Length: 177
Image (cartoon, rainbow, N blue to C red):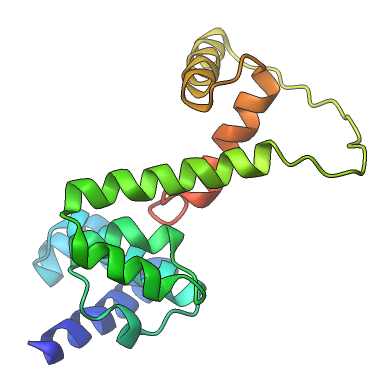
């Protein structure tokens, strides 16, 4: 069983390379390659790639997380660091997947709040960003800001925007793109 898990992790690494280097020709898309040639579900492949990429980028060895199931590992991957991996593996062994997802989300929100409320003594320089957007994009942006205000507990749009950005950078969104 352990060899199967290691093999799956290696396959995830290979899939990551295939996707990154467009080595899926003659198939027109990576999805068609995965589903037709490999015989794996596209979503599963993306999840495996996300786990592999997160662990590799964070320098987390497979041995440190080998006892964590794939579903839990997908939830943990974005928050794992070499410093906290033992703690998160222990937490994952004590919680079901739904509870673990909530715990990870709370930890990410706490980290974002800490970053947003940093009370350093150095005054921050204020700059301006300007974007021109279509009306439908503005509606989406306004809705996202309102949601971020509610989640982060702020009424300040710039704080909500930073919250969205920190959540994006700390989340899995980049890895699955």
